[in-house]
Image (tube, rainbow, N blue to C red):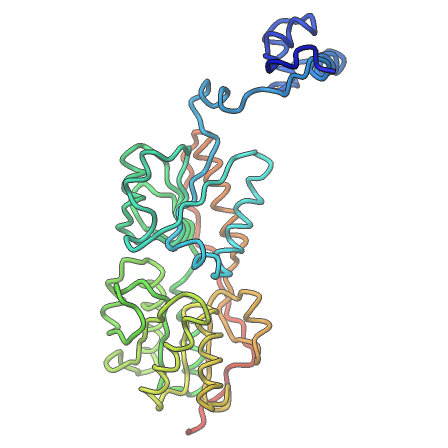
Length: 361
């Protein structure tokens, strides 16, 4: 039973109860390798006897000047962000890699500015900021850099001073576009994730995407256009639509509008699997057979791609590797190391059941 139920036992109490110095009592928790097994067991037995609960985490952080916390900056509200399976897989890998280190993870949702508000960052207690798919001019990233907080970016922003983890997005988009043109498609549409305009859900000019604030939009659009030009397809008049949201439910109405406005389209390139699955539903609602009358290609290769009906042709990127790599960069930064810019994570086209040579509708 604890000897002093009226107040919390302190480290000094533990040192006296165990008959050791304050440093030895502290080392039993913080540096156990400095003590013999017998001595550490003696200290821990004394702790149990007097009801000492262990070091105060807040006091330890104040003493070290560290928060032992990582701020994870999102581009959208939590409800929207976690409807994106690519984020969920990446974040799970990130957290799993860092779990043995005991760091806290602080999720900061975004808004209309593209990520969390910059005014929040000076008050955030964190040792490093990890930005997930934020625009190049994200206020929270600029504010983090201004206060001296190291930044690791996943997909974006492509900003000075941020260690960027990315996939070979341009190469993946090129592979997708080359594949559909190799099948014989020439009337091709593109359905993109929102972010290019303030009011998504409608048609875009390809040049608008080329100047997007988002690195992934620019890279994938560049890859699509390069491959289409190789096949003699001009970007002029190319149906490019920005979806109303990131989920398949948001994408469905946008895909339906695109296919209704451009019934000549025989292949649809989508910048995420969620958009592609929404396009599958839209095609079904319009009575357009996939892949007989319309080929659809996604991007990411999330679990939903394999279980779609029919299974989705898509570009595979290793989301687990991206999350793990970002976590290792964050660990390096926390240890005071300056990590080198990593090579892009590789991509691969995965051909399934949503693509076929074109047939006139």
